[in-house]
Length: 432
Image 1 (tube, one colour):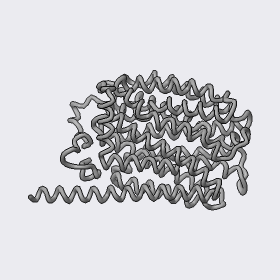
Image 2 (image 1 turned 180 degrees about the vertical axis):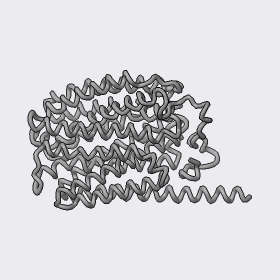
Image 3 (image 1 turned 90 degrees about the vertical axis):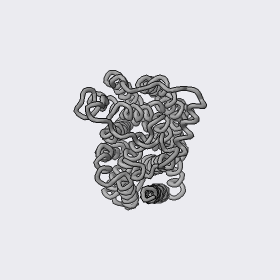
Image 4 (image 1 turned 45 degrees about the vertical axis):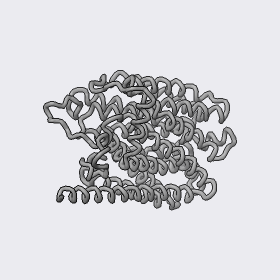
């Protein structure tokens, strides 16, 4: 993908972000579909994605129960989600720096170990304040996973297979988010929210152990520097790239929609006119399976429509789902959730893989900045969505989501214009 086709800058100063052409097939020792180690790597990172999202959003489907136990409103209970995603957003960049020095696999293993340990303490939180603090610590621990995983894939997987490989990791996120919410819903209906979170902790421990046993040792990692000046220079270079800035904003806006919708949906479905029990509400998250499919097929969408075309399609699908969810018909609300989920996971997979392909130096920092923006979007979405729901009902939450989708479309339009200008300038330069 050339700079002109992606909207990346050309000329002086663009060398750090212009994708490198694929090596000749016989000279590339990186992992590829069908090759040795690729399946182990895919399964390992899939399980890491399952553990990450199962832990990160373990309280989301339980918010009505948490509100009832502690006597708080949705906007206050939502902090158990926002604290975890906010902790991840704040620590993802420092953790990515550690992964540059000590290795992706080492940092991912340590992060999972700490996160699952905290996960076994969360069910014993004596107050909402203590629960929020534990969740913030858990989110900070999980910060070592997303950026390190993306950097690992960018280094160890052949470029042509990168979108598919990252799509599988994102698919693991969707399975983790789905299974965590479904399990917690049914377990909480019988034994309460504390037991259900404990069950998620045990599931995450199993995933963490399997991840460490399966993930192949990195073969293409080169240790970087922990010197602050070097790290700040790398971050500054990434933030000065217009294409990367657009991708970061797109990730944040997509996650604003998703965080808001799934933080509030439990309150809507347990209230009238639906009045669904907690177990059924938890099962609503089975629609995450749609995200598994849309994320894993993101590579084909990009191949057919291009990166920006895929983003337009993802944004349009998400907006259609938001509008459908406004109805009082349960089947149409569910269809709306399906469309929101499909659009979100497709857009996330496209944007995150574009970051990994665009940055050829400091990939962990480039991915970390994306993840930081992404999870800031989640925190903003869960808080803004809950506040909008408190003041204006479900239509308020939908309005927040539609504004975020409009932002995605506007940014993508800017990228399209930038690409056209770059292509025109290149033609003028060639003519001279």
